[in-house]
Image 1 (cartoon, rainbow, N blue to C red):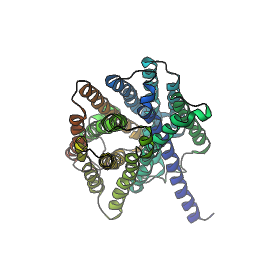
Image 2: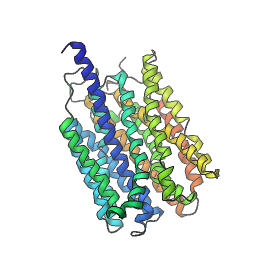
Image 3: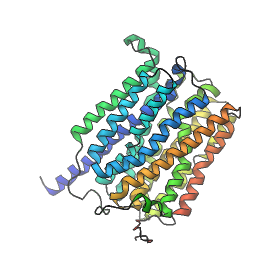
Image 4: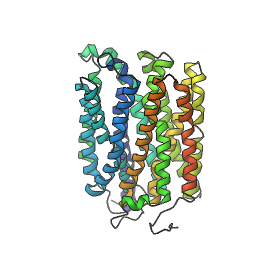
Length: 423
């Protein structure tokens, strides 16, 4: 085999790995969407009010955020292959356990367990991308991986509606089978990963520093730039998790959605989020290839992504279902374009040895932003304020997050943790 042929084979292998990770993230988002889309059928067996719904979401996000950090620690020690395998098996079994729940307490336990498992997913994905891709290609690769969130979320409404509506043909006429089937998909992926994934040959996949133990969590948090990313993720993911967990309920309650509409048009905003994932990563990589600095390429794309979000505040005053779907489609596009770029920022700032920890901190901030926003939404709805003020707040959070990144990180570049920024 010639050197050129070997290079082409390695390049193709990189993108095959990215595609495999994309499928894992798709399963993750399918799993976490099972409860929101099946909730009306679950309520026939287990009553769930707004505050209880917020409790279930918070249970998932609390352990998700903590394990996001713990998952980064785990991956830094056992490696990507073994770590991602353990993470996927655990969260798939946790997803399936929802189908055994007989009450709220059991559902809370299942949501806590699902968060523990899924919390390691994105740190594992970030680490694998850093292992296989050089910096100039990482945002595009991460865009593909982040598009998996859309694949899973797009599949959720029609798949869940199909199981609920037609499952009786196969003796599956129960919401419980929604969780058993989606959990089984994750176990199948775990086997695929175990048989396929290997550490990339040599060190030519990336060109960031890899030796040494890397900075501690404390030293990471001592840097303004790191606190800025974590804070920005807290703000932006507060909005995102509200949309993710509450949009189905909003459509059911405010716009009279039924199971048929959920299957036929409920997937559209999630499809738009997939396009956003690809566009955000593509734009940033394109700017870099055109000679723009990393700082400019990331911030231009982030600013354009944030500009898509404020339109959500118009949704409560919009009577047309088509217009509401269009508004949320724009927001989902902007959110996942934003998310792709924010997940790429750790690779721009720290050596590979610290990526798991920094990705974990970023995810922890995002999860707790989701908890705060979800609890506030449940409270506002239960006291009769309605969705309008909640959506106004959600619509403003990405703009605030972008301003925070610009203030906290005057120039995006590798940090050396001695008070300097490397050129």
